[in-house]
Amino acid sequence: SGRFEVLMLASPRDYKGVPEFLALARGLENRSDIHFTLVLNAGEVEVSQYLPATLPTNVTVHPRTDRPDRFYRTSDVLLNLSRPDLVVETFGLTIVEAMCFGVPVIVPPVGGPAEIVTDGRDGWKVDARDGVALKRAVLALADAPETALAMSEVARTRAQDFTFDRFATRLRDEVARIVVPFAKPDAPQ
Image 1 (tube, helix red, strand yellow):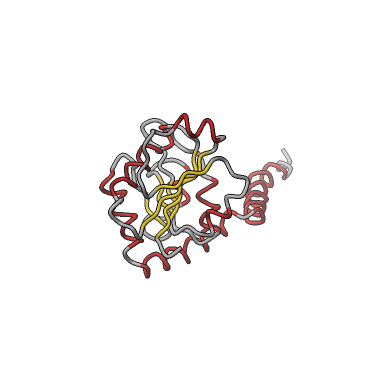
Image 2 (cartoon, rainbow, N blue to C red):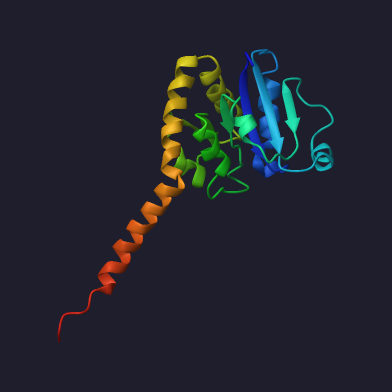
């Protein structure tokens, strides 16, 4: 698009960090080279009821989609801004999906997302309540294309750790490690 694209896919709930996303966008409205896309997991009516009447001018909002790949393909960073004081994410599917597309991510510093991301390599761990750190992380990518490209490559590689085949292999290995010792008959008594 010629602009740095910031993406967030979330439920229309404050604990998912939507107010922080909008505040970040508002704080960067003076940057015409940065655009924010918010995809809310709800229909158009619920989306319009949830959002404030006035949105920052650099934000585009979409209702629920069954094609998130359309958004990942055009994004430069994905934000997961779940508030750790209100909820702790156990995994973060959108994080891994974005990383499959080579999109660096910014995630909460606790829970499952923190286990997926290596801070400073494929994204950053930032508490959404720290608006200064959040803005700094976005600008570190928007203002340094070489950093964004390096993180993109690492993100795509890291996403391979979460493929079905990788999961199946790890599960088989772990089950074998646990079950095999118990399957051996005891020594004669």
